[in-house]
Image (cartoon, rainbow, N blue to C red; front, side, top):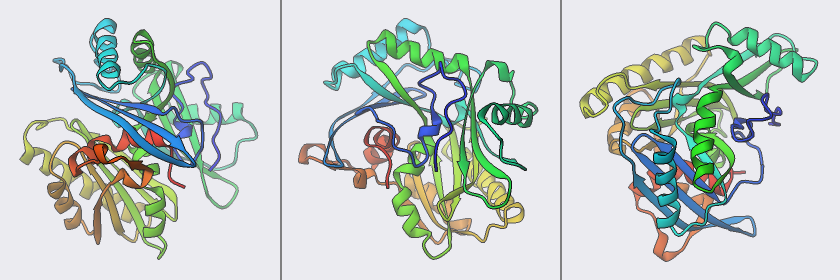
Length: 337
């Protein structure tokens, strides 16, 4: 895929067009921001490979109101900048260029079909705004919009489109800049995971089967399905209830995944998912794997970022750390070929 230039040039950090099979100059440091937690990864790149130099998972105080597409709920600028500064200091990392990985549920992502290929970028912007105006819960004048072309035949084109409030992006940028860092790229969590496992997913799909990425975070989960290296479905759902109730979370996960897979099969001619790559940072992997297996996946594998880097003996990751660090590793180490 080739990237469309970001629609909003001045929002240099919100560039999801870098997420799918592209090769920008990734900063060697990435920080995933999620509710109640900051995760930093620092890598050293040499000869096309990345070595894991340092990582740190740092708790943050939780605020009374959870994050949403309308507000990241970071607390005050000074408070958030202090947590970021502490994260850099305790990980032994000098603030500099950094990628920021944000929760999927701060953006609205969908696949948009245009009946004809736009003649230029201005026409593309106008068509996307027309298509999105009834499905986005805020004014598009206040939004950052990025899109990626997906391979398709015929005169039309399919695009994976992400929309985020400009003010939300700016709050994250401001907090990192106040801590002395320079945001170079902003990723969303699941696309970062998808690209991290892209090489493995391509091999799993070599016999014509579809593959899925299931990302279970604390406050949301996302299902992304690819067919022949092309994303055909993506859906993110926030946990409305039961955030700290394992049984309720599992029930919601099973219900929503079943609904999503039903749509995929009925509306998108899906023949079924043979392999599912799972990242679970909120509950045991086995619990999520059992849900996915009951929905028909033949093989369920944990997302393992080991293929993206060479870790030294002192930095070998156990299974739980690998799950927590996977999005940040994807953003720091770059994307699988």
